[in-house]
Length: 173
Image 1 (cartoon, one colour):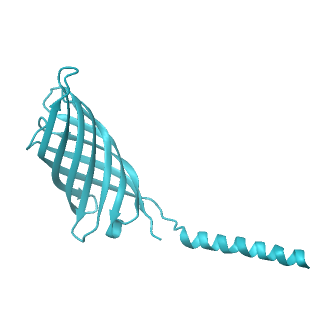
Image 2 (spheres, one colour):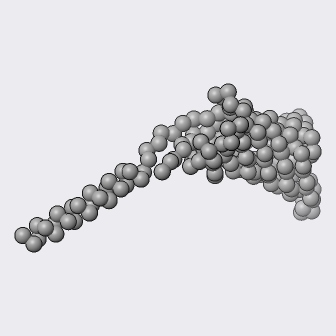
Image 3 (cartoon, helix red, strand yellow):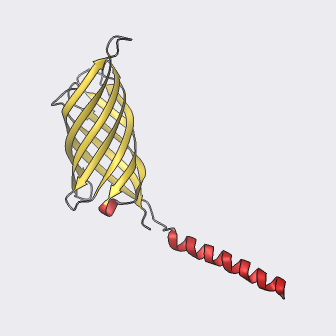
């Protein structure tokens, strides 16, 4: 009988672990999210690299408003890095979206800026991921893509817009 009792103890341990896993892991279905944002450069600083003509690196600070497909609006703050040759090249940024109810999220974007054919505008394209959420977005996970355009040369006052599409889930425990 001793062998039977220790077998039941082992089975009971497995059942406890399985029950714990079922309670602690929340199945969350991914949702889609789309928005357009309007942004304005409040600060832009760049320095020449001096390796090839027109190569600059720099930092940008943008403010704006994001308009979500569901009708919500969020205040927007973006801090970015650039590495351009003649206006084209890679960019990276962190964007904070703050909603009226106190909720918000932060995304990290990585992409490329390309000068348009006429040389007057600049197109953006890239990917992003959610890195933090608060309030109803606490536990947000997911990623997406974006496209957009800056309507002037990089500098204070330059206006632009971006269109985002995301797949995300909010995981709660």
